[in-house]
Amino acid sequence: MTTTGFGIDVGGSGVKGGTVDLTTGELIGDRIKILTPQPSTPDAIADTAAQIVRQAGWAGPVGITLPAVVTAGVARSAANIDKSWIGTDAGALFGSALGDRDVSVLNDADAAGIAEDSFGAGKDTTGVVILLTFGTGIGSAVLHNGVLLPNTEFGHIEVDGKEAEHRAASSVKEKKDLSYKEWSVEVSRVLTTIENLLWPDLFIVGGGISRKHEKWIPHLTNRTTVVPAALLNTAGIAGAALASVTKTASFS
Image (cartoon, rainbow, N blue to C red; front, side):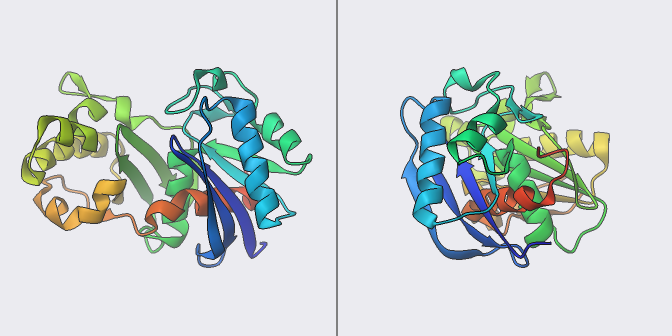
């Protein structure tokens, strides 16, 4: 496999990209960040991605994440980006904007999941690994022995009559002014519901609140081991770069 790749991670506030060492998942050189254009329309984001690639001087294939469900290269939802993305053939759009090169487009949580599974907190684990990112909502990624099950939406599963992310997103903790111990009760309920369905071998928890994992992971009461994400804000870029060279149907 190619030893370097290029990934772009599209977020609500910033579009970030960089060259990645695909043997370690580490960035080679500086991360490039441009503020997400407003409105964050498909054409505006595609132009921003092209600017990042030009600035980096990258000539090969590119992997790009979107905060959206992505099937066969088409965006089916839009979270924290303009709603005009829904139904957009993102693969074709980015491919054209980047000079008709090979482009792989995938969900942002899926990108973080494959990066953590390959290079980070899940690299030494076989079986089923589930990444959950806690932020405004809850993002998810499921992998089995390194193979991604794309576009899972565990933030929307019902847990005791309420959507998981309405119980346990980090935004809920802030809104309700919960202590870490109080919030961990809700996180445990969500994790227990998921593990009763899929019986994972490992949970990886990400999002900004994972930086303070020592304040809440020890309070969790679910049965599956829970560890903090290792790659943090570079996971999306690393996962996108990896997707750009694996050429699996999940990412195309």
